[in-house]
Amino acid sequence: MSAENASALLLELRGISASSGGSEILEDVSMTVERGDRVAVMGPSGSGKSTLLKVAAGLEPAGSGHAFFDGRDIATLGQREELDFRKRAGFGFQDGALWENQTVLNNLALPLRIHRPELSEPEIAERSRALLSSLGFTDSLGVRPATLSMGERKIVSIARAIVLEPELVFLDDPTGHLDEDARDRLYAVVDKLVRKGTTIVAVTNNSGFVRRFALRLVVVANGRVTYDVPMKVALAAEGLEPAARSVVARLKRYAERDRLDEIEERR
Image 1: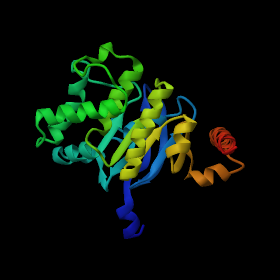
Image 2: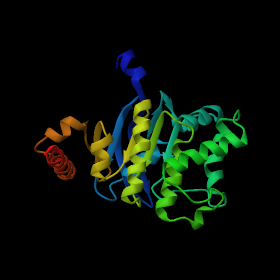
Image 3: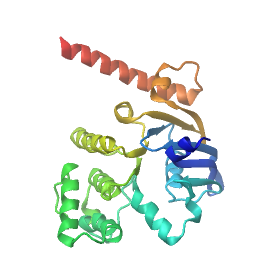
């Protein structure tokens, strides 16, 4: 690997395997993510996509193999290095995973208090309020997660993931439980991340999200990465294995629908 490529590399998985309850979830998974890349991880339910994301983010241990962030093995980070990693990488959970004993405001404020101690409490509150508002959250910031719908919990989780303006964002099913208006607001926020050059790794089977944001497609099936190519290559590919073929076929149908919509709008 050249020095130029090494400096571009932000995240790397090498030979990752993981299991739960005696069942293997991931088997010898390797992949790399360069700075500014936007990777969509797709595939059948239960194929190991969420586990892959959590191992990459250092939230679940690998049974074997290594996950590296900016050249450092995540499993061996010291306390100071761990804090730096958590500041530079955010995670939006599929089920929200909010701190239930904290208010919505504190769910966003706690990371800011830890990693941005120079901010005053009014500044923290305003930053949190503005970000949640941009995502369409209109409830009081003093409520606790138990009172929220699944869609609202997802919005708060995504806001918490990006409140520190990290350079790497992991998103697990970012559009799940969101209605059409909420998805549009999410897309607008992700558009801003893209303009900033944020690296994004998203587990999703939402073809609209993938078509709009992904530069690269990774397909996971039966605990393995079976396909990993730039999106332009994926849409032109033929003769794929079944899981990748199914994913690419959906993306092609979505692309064709977009093309027909554009023709209709020009008339």
